[in-house]
Length: 145
Image 1 (tube, rainbow, N blue to C red):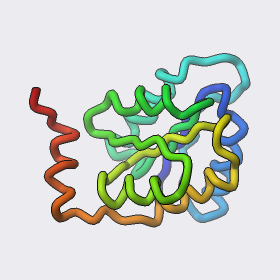
Image 2 (spheres, rainbow, N blue to C red):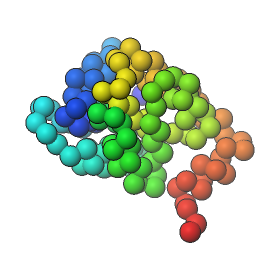
Image 3 (cartoon, rainbow, N blue to C red):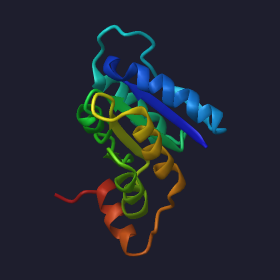
Image 4 (cartoon, one colour):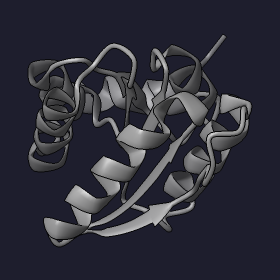
């Protein structure tokens, strides 16, 4: 699977670990940065991640920052992207099954690497259920005010 991954400076180490692990699992991974520990603004990387998922360059996206909150908010600014902040595998699976999430966000300061890998595995292995959930997902990309 083609997966894009991005973070801010607070999640650089977790991003590197997940990137290598995903490659070992046979996935094609696009690392959208950053490449150093220098302080950066998470919205810039969240927007980049959302863009490559929205345009189909990547099938799924993984967004990381200290808490996962800020970067998930920035990713979700793109109406074609559904990013769920997760901290355990059940939420990651349900985000796919019920909400057709095409991105997940994880807080590197709150979630250890083994738990992050479990979340990513659940996210990648779970299929969207469709059915009654489809009309709700459609509304996420096409809000009526």
